[in-house]
Length: 62
Image (cartoon, rainbow, N blue to C red; front, top):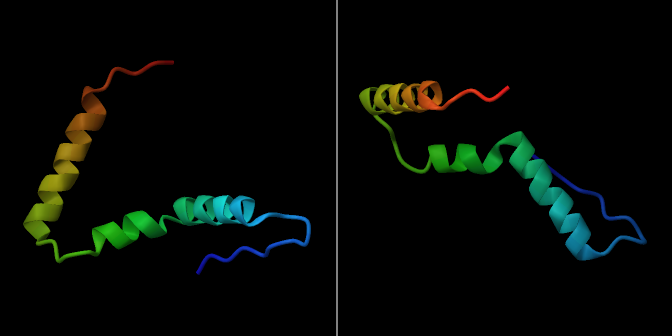
């Protein structure tokens, strides 16, 4: 569980921004979207294969 301690001289918007960044870094939102509905193993396999194809298709920039 992500938590942010708000300091005395810090405003709410700044603390909210830090909290959102922590959640994004921890992968909470992507995990939530992934578990929103049941995904059959064949669908999961197909999604991963498509992601691998997209990754390999992109030109590599050094």
